[in-house]
Image 1: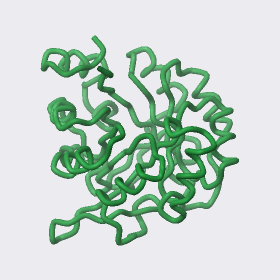
Image 2: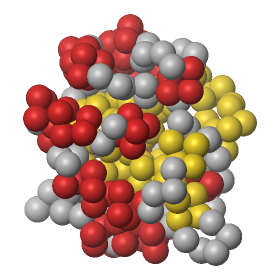
Image 3: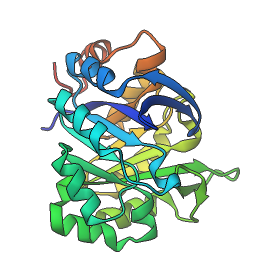
Image 4: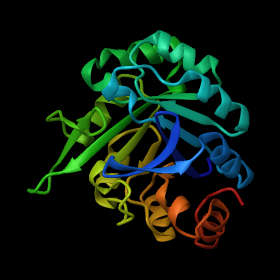
Length: 251
């Protein structure tokens, strides 16, 4: 049985590491290469590296920084932000990424998922879904760093993305991002039960219980940032807690 993954999420804004609250209020938290070294030393299962300004500014990822970070990571590295073409994906993989994460381009051109999966393999293609909760309790998919409402339902879009060839889904409550108020386990469970590919949950992790609850809901991985930057928790403490709770993580 595959081990469930603890996944730090590194956000890059104009070459610096940042943390956000609800995808805004950027707060500088350091150098991405230095941070990658720390998570490598703590034996993180995977690292997700996202250029959060790429889609809005209509520019490509900072390839040189990706290359430098990948040189410090001996764990799987997923990279996303502003990927719009097969050439973008090829270039990122050549810089050392193991997976590519697509979001805005996938929604705007769903056939891009199929083209990418056909060219590079489904295991390489991750579709990230940012969503917000409406006042009536329903959910809506957003793109372009959660600034553009699409009218799509996140569960239905996850099913469609997997059907088109996505090898993994990341589901993020954008309106919980950086708040450390807890994951939306109800939404996460619906996505997990609706697709036949691994699901990574993120957006709102604030305690070690949030990791446990998400893993018990069936996710393959939990992505988190603020809890590792702004509390005394670490990958090491998280893994020990989850092992003691009977979760199938690396010892």
